[in-house]
Length: 429
Image (cartoon, rainbow, N blue to C red; front, side, top):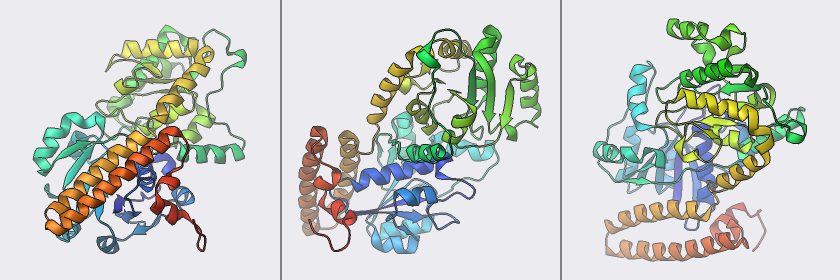
């Protein structure tokens, strides 16, 4: 099975500050480790037909194809980053290929955002896919998406891997910068003044800085020693807006000279030099790469993401008072509890790995179902061949899962095609 994933390189952006772009490469890593996957490529959907240098360093052999080439070379197209041309999708489906839309962003924001925030959006005719895949956060939208796109909707797991942030950390260390929360010597008690960063992009109704800013101000008024400063990233774009200007000027933390508006920065770079805590808020979009990066770095994460309720410092919904209390608690207790905080966070993050057997099995199951359905409409002989291939893939998946769980084998050991792709020319098994 040959897989093509849509990808758009965004001008002026790097992989470090492009969460949706990172998710593409997390899926590439998962697919390359699976049995029954012969090849994985990216399909260029943007103005810059080249991978970012940061991704190229980690995936030097990952092809980036023009759509015309991909139409000849892939069996399944997964739409993720960037929107493939609708006529091209019709063309590849007419050739017997399968098309999946992996909906990573919140669906309602994709419908409403372009009009509310006066920006461009991706428009295409609705029945362009064979399946829609959604993350757990968007399961409630399943019936709407099924009605709109007239195809089945299935849930797949969120993926996260430290490969990008680890590489970024290494680059920062080479310049004398350290990523990761630094507890005071001995983890002594007492309130610590935190440098808070707010990374909400303020370009969609799902993620705005207002709740985090109000929480920081309430925490500051209750416990001034808990906050050294508050930095609102992407806030520089809003400073001229009358409503935001009125809100900002009314805040005690602003009047004390501790509120700063900044531009866009990548997470690891900014945290390594300007902040040691993150306050976040979302509305029905609680799967965010910066949240996971914060947990990975051991930083206090004050958040309202229910799926992370047992991690970080959780507050419910729009409860600003609870968010302020959580921030003060982090300033008071985090140093003493950091070792356990990091241990629990890392254990949780391991379950999101592209190399997790459970995650691999879920994606392979969907792909086998998708391609088996294709074979079923292609005649008895083709269906028989596909059925045999699916049975073989099931056996390989069982061996792959057992080996991963025992920790005795790498993905290349259980996936001969993957091993062959990585084997130097001229070498043998």
